[in-house]
Length: 303
Image 1 (cartoon, rainbow, N blue to C red):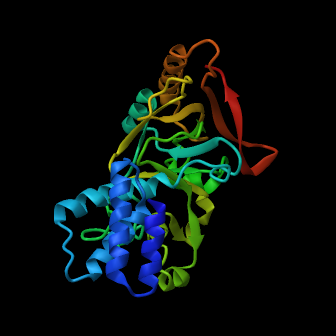
Image 2 (image 1 turned 30 degrees about the vertical axis):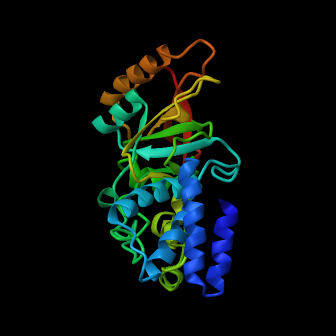
Image 3 (image 1 turned 90 degrees about the horizontal axis):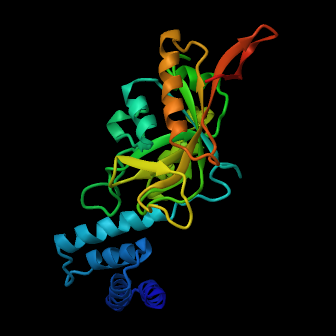
């Protein structure tokens, strides 16, 4: 499969596009036969085919290959030692509302669409993304942070300190078609100059420099809006879920008193379903110390 693809690249570099397309087609057929998914082979096949006047790739075949392409390219972004700076913990600053309650109770991540994001140029409309292109425009995302204590994150994403911060542990395993990656931050001029390069990263994994304080790590997928998680019990686990669990929930320093019992009951209920040897979810609260009025500290709360 790879040999045919490499031969195709060699022929294409010699401007022998028909011979290149034949090799890409051999590679593609072997890929489909072996039920593997390789976005490079699909991309080369489609690109060469569209340049040849005597080749007609049907819309049905294009749609099928596009689905495989997006799963394959997403699968490249798996958990590694750099995802969370060598750790296994990521943090979610959040409102505490009915949607959050449901996600915590039923243990899932909700992936937002482009229209639901707060940055108007998130998932930008690029020329090589969307209808008629291999890269889908309908990716959805769930944003986490490497930042365990950020005044700005509490203010911007946790209802001005009235919300919560959820600490997740990740084992690293993800379902097929779900990716995870740190966001890169760069200047607008550079993004404009390179908007037709590294299209997938420009579209999904790059933000303007002004958002750098978020230290974002992003879960993403183009075919689901809700991904359930659980800590895997090896060797048996559900490959449709993420290997993850909630470790701790921290209340904002303005978290409403009348909601404290509700979140305590929620944590207690989840902990009761855990086995004796499993780590229980802890509860903390943010506060401002008399000795240090310019930062937020955390302390344990009894359940």
